[in-house]
Length: 333
Image 1 (cartoon, rainbow, N blue to C red):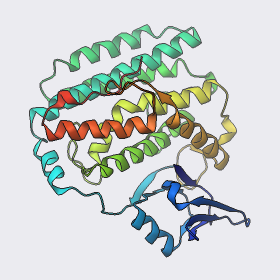
Image 2: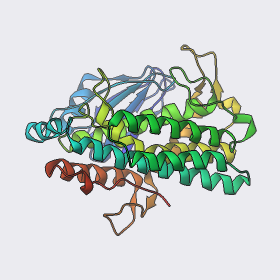
Image 3: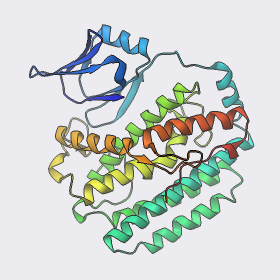
Image 4: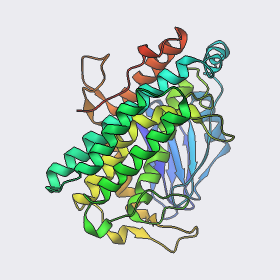
């Protein structure tokens, strides 16, 4: 299957003879057979024809819109996968013990994955981040004892601070950063992970929608207007595994340079250039297609993208039987 990213201003996406066609301002064309296209991401000021929009809606191909700097605006989507009965089950579990137990499982897995990523780079850079590792381990153990979701979120926040403190000591000095920042990202590292999280959130949003669930009815993240809280819930276990690991690999492997960023864009903050976005999206897409054996319920290798879809199937089962133990978050080793 193909995913189409368009980050050229004035490009136009249309449909011709059962193919999606991108026409660029310099006269170049890119064609993708309609049967193979899974989603479209538009970054900046590209256009879509009415016929193309209609074809995307008919085929259930989601179209996501981002600013030139990577801020997520929203998506075009069909209503073909709505399952009202399943969504009523989902909503009914919001105030139940199910939400607490599922949240514990997700955040403990997230903290575990952060530990593994930190240990990998600690070893490769031959630098000690033992203090940060111990803080994350402590948060992971505390989460198991929590009785309320706000407590879980508190330990998640403490763990995240320790994690990013650790990463900042393991990254190439040229790209050193001082903690997590966003809206807007103020440095190169945060610029890349913010864009990566937006893309990952959109991937998960689509997989949730395909299973008939409501992306806005979360369990861990509480109701928040205009925010897909269930997508945020399900993204937690994948952040370090997919996005953070990709960014660290690119920076420490010298696959991206300072010239691939700009700080005087149309919106304040630090953002990838057109060439930087191309490098980053290529690397991130390669990561999503990488096959692994981290899922407990699957005894064969699957790509990270397929793994996300399988996790949504597991979530549906957990919701159907109102049993959080059915859901087994991904935990890397």
